[in-house]
Structure formats: C-alpha cells, structure tokens
Length: 120
Image (cartoon, rainbow, N blue to C red; front, top):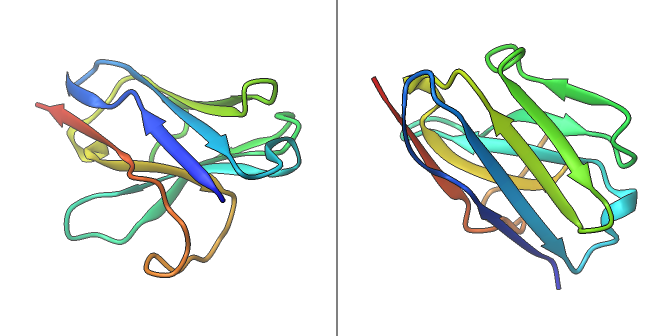
C-alpha cells in the first residue's frame, strides 16, 4: 500500500530555512509527478510546489516562488522541499503526495505530515 513519510519540520525564526523530506513507498515513484501541500490552522489545504516525474519541470505557488525549491531523487524514492526566507505565514502542516489539482482529504491517502512553525 501507499506510504508517504514526511520529515524535517520544526520551529524556526522568520528568515530561517528548513529542508523537508518525503519518503514514498507503495507507488512507482519515478513515473509520478509529486507535490508538496500545506494546511494552516483554519485554512484549506493548498498546493505549494510540484515537480515532474523526471524532475525536469517544477511549479510553485506565487506565495512561495523564489523562496522554496522542490527536488527529487528517484533512486531514493524521495522528494524534498528546501524552504528559505521563511515567514510566519508559512506556518502549517506540510504534506507530500502525488501531484493533483483536486483532492479529497477524507478519502485520499495522506501521510502524517510535518509541522513547520515560523516565529516572528
């Protein structure tokens, strides 16, 4: 079965950096575009970054463009999110998943996520 394990979150001051990792199993990782998503308290989950299966193409939400970088290592079945110049508004639980533009939080599989907290 699909398993996605996110790690690397934590508490950081504004302006700091974190690198998130997501180890995937139970899927043919190398043929799937992947995405990082986040959900802040009281807000809907949003897609923040996506990467093509080969890693040759990436896309970012406007709110993180120029600060976050998504990458992947298909040999390790792992996708990463390098987050620089963090802001308090980046505080959220971050999840990875296969790339999608719509989702069903209750019925789709999601990992446990990793908490990112940015203090001002």
